[in-house]
Figure: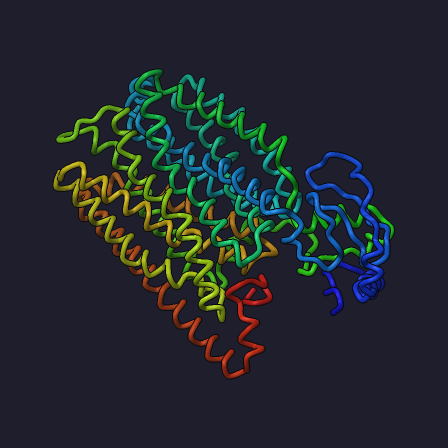
Length: 525
């Protein structure tokens, strides 16, 4: 079997790779071990000058031309990158919610209004959403590592600015800049996983990556409440400096470039036989996408209903939980800052345990219904259809009627868990269908999530004052239910249609379905 041609490879190079791939086994066996790597870089380049297809030492293993790009790293190295990205991704929501318990203290210390302090929350969400549209294309063009390094250094500086803000205006400005910098973590993390894990393993990986994204909004108040109560509100931003510094050092010493085109270019730059080196998957030349283009990627009917439902559900969850500190501080609960932070642990615990399960269920569903990429959502989305609106209603009306705190915490646990059943599947779906623009597509999702959440943060106080907490969240829950229902119906229709078409075309066509991988070639691009 010949080596598939890689986008951008010249015909002579492709012919050479194909000829090398047909070399007899004896020739392959004669190939000696590669010489020692020339440096200690995360991806070591060391040509194999023996007979057979061009080979290179990547990630500690000898990889021959025509191998899968997803096989160049050992499982240990893959999961090491996953844990690093999960830690960095935690900063995205944690940075926003860590100082929520201290909003009243900020208002008093900076002699400002509740409207201005709420603006410092919303502006962060808006800049995260807007910057994601730029960081994503930048990571596709210039690589994941450079973008993450740059944004980490910026985050450190802007966090210091927040900690030393003398008035609310300066705080709002640096909060906006902080959001702009931290947005790269979410974009880069999803892109690194899309580079590293093959489609059939990506649901589980995205499930693990989703844990900090779902736990962050819950754990932020826990950490921030204790810090603010004991050391003052500025300590929350010094905590961000410390965490940001740790992430910067981890990225500096352990991050490696994963972008497929950058890895392939580094291999071919060694010259000689490696000029014809290629991977089994098609690798495209990197290009910077205009900031509005990532949003256009999500208009693909294959991913649009699922993405829309997940984004709306995230916004509804954020809007619902943002009122928890204010309600728990008043009667009949009357909790202090530290106690309010502890009350948020329930929702984080639900997300922590449910996110890996949601990811593994997505992988299982992709194998069970392989005829269409959205088959991976056929388990998680129906669960979310019932659990997300139901838990939102339970949570809101428990607070509205001043029910026992245990009822409120039970509802937040279910809400945190239920979103974990759709989020990993959604990110995995988009990264598979849009493999070529994985970072840009991930940035578009993050952009919509945080822009909508910021809008909800601004609207929620007015909605609550006008309608009351219970009726207002009931309205949001009905919107989430409608979006999830549309996503579920469209998925079932698409899977049944493509399964019927594949069955009619024969077993070979059915085996080539889009559920397990293939990127954009297996679905509408």
